[in-house]
Length: 73
Image: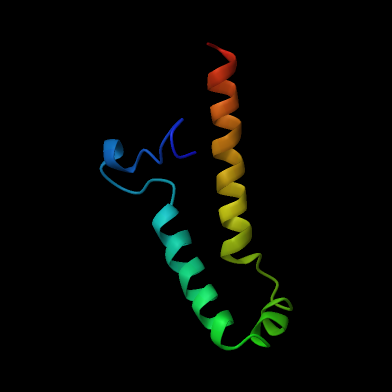
């Protein structure tokens, strides 16, 4: 992800994929869970997947795009 492609935020002039929000939420979750470790068990009961799954999906999408682009070379 780092060197084979980008987030296209600069060229688009805005965060079209919502990456900044995912990053913000991830930092918030890690900050809270680092101080209140038992909160992880409480959050696991929540029906929403949370920012970690969103980040994993985003990274997976970028990996697939990179693989598809490299296949055409």
